[in-house]
Image 1 (cartoon, protein in one colour):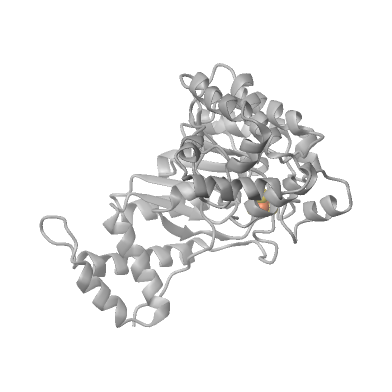
Image 2: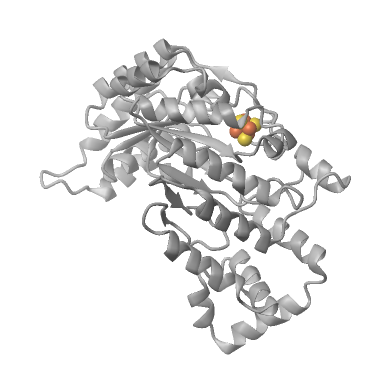
Length: 380
Ligand code: SF4
């Protein structure tokens, strides 16, 4: 009987077709006020031997799956499905994951969980080298890391990780404002983010950072964006991935909201934050990526070197709409009915009337903002 390997719960959307290798479990910090991802999971670093064992088990499943690849490179999916149907359920998930990964080219691997870069460099290089030796066709290996830990790693140490096979680090910066970072108890300063980012880039790795428009609430809305623009300008990360903030029940920020210490940003304020991020980031070729359904204007994406005007035009088209039409778009977007303003234009009169009714019945500005917050929260 085949053994199974660990598969953790979380990965960035951009790693949807990556093989997930669990090197750690949970998050070393676990105190960000907006996050309850790992609230009930104690951080654990698996031993190098145990991770290597998982890689060996993955290789066994891969060998099995490759028996169903024809000489011309196509796959006999029916025979894989038949084999899957005869396996116990715990093995099915492992086999299915590996088979899908290989069918998609077997290119990328993501090292889980929330802060794998907290591991000592030696352990990680050992894991990376072994992974690359077992699966030599891998093209890209990525991992999450917290800026606070990353700021203690030198460019030379990042270069060693790069040489061992790590290509990209994802890091949830969320804001570049020290006030906002303190407000949400992120446990990191903007200077640590800058040091971390500059060292990662100097070590030859790609850097993907996350920014949360709305995280500073109404009071620190523009502060949130200006801080992020400052960090981006100093680091030139390869990617800034937008993650619109929403305050979810069972988080500390929800408690702050309920007790009046935090006021939600409106949808427009969040859009204006993205505008400020774009206008105030200078001298960089970072790509703005909008790869999550929680972002209102999914079409706002592109290079800060060449696409600023295009992105600002989309934002300004939205901001220039009459209030009622903005609400109609917001609710249609939050219900997953449209992706862009253009799709809204193409909507049937009956659908438009429906969203018009919902917009009119949405209450005052605060009630509407709370409603949008709840709707965004359903997606995360
Ligand atoms: S560092 Fe990331 S995973 Fe950990 S608590 Fe903060 S947001 Fe959540």
